[in-house]
Amino acid sequence: MLRVIVVISIVLYCVGLLLGLTIPYLGLKSVGTQNKILKLEFTMIFENNLRMILLLLLGAFLFGTTTVLNLIYNGMNTSLIIRDSLLARTDPISITLLILPHGIFEIPAIIIAGAAGFKIPYEIIRYLAGKKEQILTKEDIKEYFTLALTSIILIVIAAWIEAYVTPRIAEYFLR
View 1 (spheres, rainbow, N blue to C red):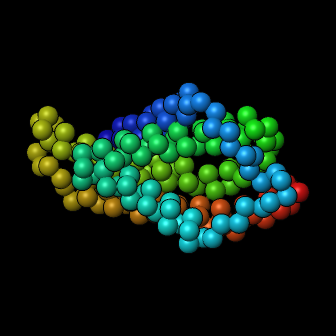
View 2: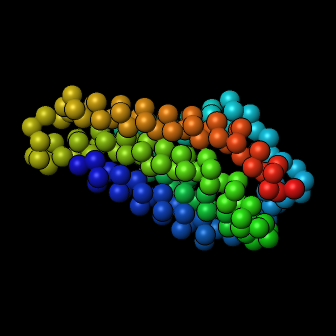
């Protein structure tokens, strides 16, 4: 059952990625290539990412609405950053070095939080369809909290990498 809501999360994130490609060029300046190394504080990054994760998780109590919107939004945001950086002639290797290290943790955190945001609505739909006898079981609630906690742990790791590792990579490779 978990597989279904994970696939839904991945599909919605990918829809956002594709939508981001259709939005007109925003004229962003290339990131990290003008001898300016982007320095972001861990707390600022973590608070921003935690807000995003909480909105995804909130979907569990709002029948998935905030989850759907935020999965699509975050996919769009990712593709806009990459696409506009490429259009601004930022070296693809530079873009990869600035996104990939924390993205390895952040994107799965988004997908997992999305799955958590769909968990309770999914179980309610299954109950209403007569596919289960109880609306929410202890196992359903445990699975929701496991997904939520996993996504938060991943977002902490991603924020730490973005704040402390990415600037060092940028300093070393992007001078």
